[in-house]
Image 1 (spheres, rainbow, N blue to C red):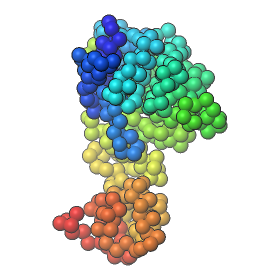
Image 2 (cartoon, protein in one colour):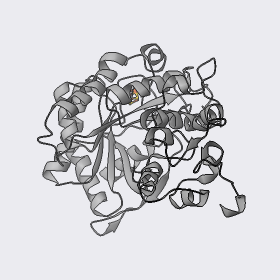
Image 3 (cartoon, rainbow, N blue to C red):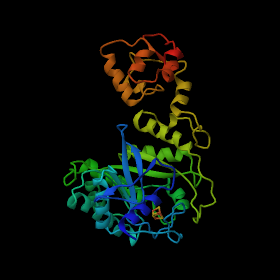
Image 4 (cartoon, rainbow, N blue to C red):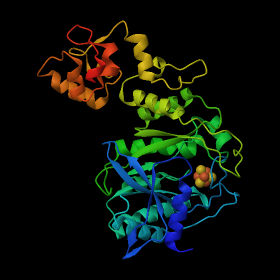
Length: 382
Ligand code: SF4
């Protein structure tokens, strides 16, 4: 199999769930690729889109996670790169302008340590030999050592290890050969220690890589509360930048092939809740979980909280603290910053002023006062 075909196969096989994927035929060394490479579009924190190539060093794996298309023993095509081979083909695709970043993962062969070394070799070649200065998301392999993690954090823009499940019991049902505490949770905690205690010497851009994790949602009966509890703990104790929630989709020829796919809508509530915990000062006890620990499907948890707590006690926008403002539906982190700046020079007296600050006035109208008066919402104006 030639290198470009391997890249197409490994990139296609990464896209097992709905994603924002575009097909790309890069022109490399004057020749346009005959077949398309799937490229993911991701939205950065700034709101800008970035084209990312998601691929794997090898799609062979010796582990047997029940949900995974790459699990050992499954009948499927496999492709393996040498580190230099992958670094060079990615470098050419990048130089051709087809992508802006690389998400690099791998199946596990000969243990997590050896696999991590091959991922690090690939990153080293990209950064040191080929002078790559772009975005690199490097996966951490279960069982890696602390020194390998430090090296990954020096070479990458972002590192991640997927917890997959919210606790050891759920993980056993999902991925029997993975160890929750030692293999998955420990590296997330080490990353925080490195980031907070060590000088970022030897990093490619003077900063330690950020850390994220991902959960498989809906395969083994875990509740929303279980998922957001561990996410909140990681935001507080491990400096986690973001928890991702990947809804379960059954894969043919795996032990979970007959399970139903999880409702995509479930992850909307999980993301909303995890952001309320990370950025808006909410606690788990304040959020609207039902008796089974699940969030109401289709109802914004911040709106649910506001209906209970602000309907009869609206917040005065001209005097409220940043923390109070963040609790109003429609008031985001950036909108509140703009409002606090605007408030220094003038009093806010009507909803159109909020709208000019980028705050959706319609969502906020029932929960605020402006100079002591409940605002009048006129649909035609918004
Ligand atoms: S270790 Fe990773 S690649 Fe291997 S079966 Fe599990 S999830 Fe899939």
